[in-house]
Amino acid sequence: MLLDSTLRASDHRMTRPRRVVWDVLNSTSRHLSAAEIVAAVHELDPGINTSSVYRTLGLFASLDLVRESRLTDDASTWEVAHPDDVIHLVCSLCGGTSHLSTHAVDALRSELGTGSDFHAAGIDVRVTGTCASCAARLHD
Amino acid sequence: MLLDSTLRASDHRMTRPRRVVWDVLNSTSRHLSAAEIVAAVHELDPGINTSSVYRTLGLFASLDLVRESRLTDDASTWEVAHPDDVIHLVCSLCGGTSHLSTHAVDALRSELGTGSDFHAAGIDVRVTGTCASCAARLHD
DNA sequence: ATCCCTGCAAACTATTTGCACGGGA
DNA sequence: TCCCGTGCAAATAGTTTGCAGGGAT
Image 1 (cartoon, each protein chain N blue to C red):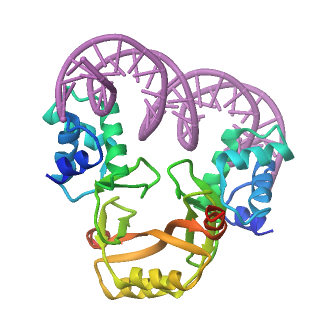
Image 2: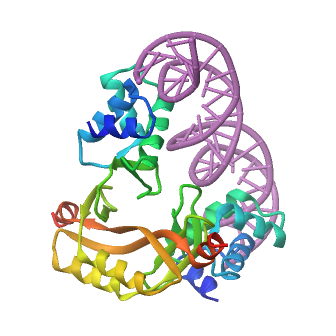
């Protein structure tokens, strides 16, 4: 629905690749790599081409439907756009990513607002470290 | 000097590529892409190979001498490691990057410390937006 | 009927790796 | 002397692009 209306509003057509990629992205709250998205897309429709997935992700990003992150040294990951500022917690052991909202981001935003040197649009916080389950595993 | 002692301490040899890459990185406070580093290195010594530059950057990063950032959609950028947490301000118009330290990062760090779900090691903040000079140019 | 979007394949860019030689300790 | 680090060239991974036909509006 959101997809349909957003596409219409921006003079884009609703097509099968776009529908399927959208469904895949909305089927999880995880960050997905392009390769994972392609795999999941192929499970639903093996006929959809990899380059269409990339083009679709690019389009969705330009429409602010999804958000691209380069959290690790590897490939980009994608997730359905989250309206609020969000902190990414990236575990260096398992590679898992989770979200966190704190008012530290709001605090930062207002600190930035006081200076006139830079107009902030988006704030992206990545915290690297170890998640609880990996930490627990280390203690065994 | 820092380079020399750090290499020694970690059982690595001081070589020409390492010296030259180090000099290049220390000749600026900007973020440099691998390509820029290679170009600057070649100006000092055209015989140094690109792969040696990559290997050197990887080594320096593992020794915490330099810091790799993936601030844009393009290639990684590198800078001499900064001891404190730092916020990157990335202008989406000119691509320029500047630094900023605020206590918002400290605030975030303590907020994270209160929860036990995640142990934070590094905090990386990227703010996208428009820098003062690009904003000024837009008003002409 | 129009022309946007797609599948396909090839191109491209940034980065990594295998190997044999040479220089630093 | 020993073997780590290098230059070289080829390989790799992720992503992008040109093109001609098919489908959405």
